[in-house]
Image 1 (cartoon, rainbow, N blue to C red):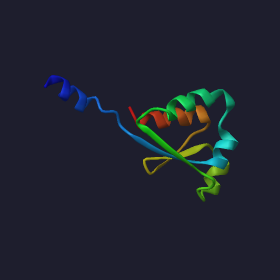
Image 2: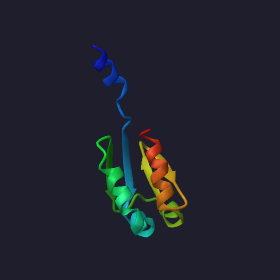
Image 3: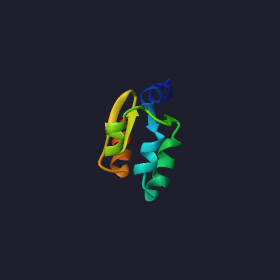
Image 4: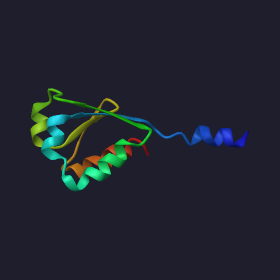
Amino acid sequence: MMSLIQKLFAKQKKAKIEFCQRNLEQFLQEENYADYNEFMNRKNVTYKEFECQSRCKECRMSPYAVVNGEFVEAKDSAELLKKMAKYIE
């Protein structure tokens, strides 16, 4: 019985992340590829890339993602990864 309770409370939060392909091409730095790949392959993370999300003004200014429906922007791709990770902590 105890293991069932532990399993219920140990559930990880899920993150549904949407990216703009053009934004990734513009801001994702090569040194962050491995970290992004590791993050996106977590079982509690689902993601989708769109060719364009019609957020052109934001897209030109900084890296962003839409996490669980919430717009998240950052000064660089490393900071964006940290911000996205907070959604599943």
